[in-house]
Structures are given as structure tokens and as C-alpha cells.
Length: 203
Image (cartoon, rainbow, N blue to C red):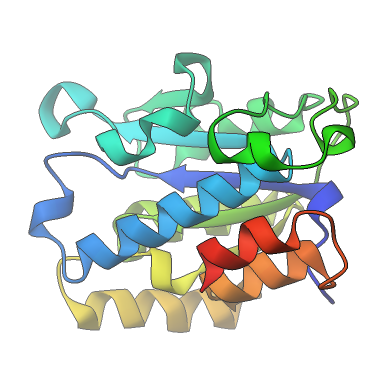
């Protein structure tokens, strides 16, 4: 089964300013999250983000702010965002976010407003892999979403914790992918009108 862009939502979990510096490979994970967000915006895929106790852990990293409106950021107190209303937000019909930034170079027909649709595939990336990402992904799976975790856009304080999270997620039925896999599956073909724009991001 391939990832369908028309059924996808991108969820960015807790890429927060005071958390990232403490994580193993936090910088590369954030860089890949920015690539995912940029690709999602170009393909009109809705983006959501979470912040865990932001008064203590800080706001979402500035690198992601161009892709997020305040209404797209869910404040949470639980490790799983599902306990703070994420499922209700994802179950609501999703209107693709407006195109701006690099995506303006896309053909005009890709920049038209997208229809409001219900989406069931959640692409998850974030911090920490073994806590908030893990618990959110497992509960989304219980809610009958198709869940894909982007391994090279996730981080934990230790490599062992991160890898243990991936083992558990895979065993539960979550699909593990990389940023490049997501990008190319969203595109499906080099003939996609956005291929050249996204190829620069993916590579």
C-alpha cells in the first residue's frame, strides 16, 4: 500500500524550542520535518502540529512557523495528543491550507483552493519518538486511522529509546517510512506537476 496524498494529513509532534537541543539527532529530524511541511504545503496536504506544555517547553521551532497558523497548533498536556482533542480535529473535514512561499512556483491549477474532504491517513513525525510520538501514533491506530511514522524526522534523547519506539510501532502495525519515501509516494510519478519543485526538497 502506498501513501495517497489526497488522503493524507501531516502531524508534527512537539518540535519545541527547548526540547530539540536535548535530543539525539534533533537537528536533522527538524530539517526533515521542515521538508515534509514544505512538501505538504506544495501538495495542499493539511498540516497539524502539537505543543506539549508550551509554557515550560517553548513554542514550535521557528523553522516550522512559516507552515503553521495558530489554529493548526494543538496545545496538549497529555503525552498522547489524542487525549487533548486531536482525533476530533483530524476527523473534521479538512480544507487544504493556502499555498505560499516556494509553492507559488507551482502551476496555477495546483494553487486553486482544494475541496473540503475527510482524510484518514496520518503521517506522523516528531519528538520524543518513544513518548509523545509513540503514544499519539498508537492511539491514532486504535481510532482506525492509517498511521505512518517518518523515522528520519523523529528524535529522542537517546538513540536506544528512539529505536525501541520504532520496534514497538512496527509491531503494532504502524508503517515506518522515511522523508524521501513520503515525498516520492505523494508524487507517484516524475510527471507530477510538482515533481521538480519537490525533487529539490527531497534530494
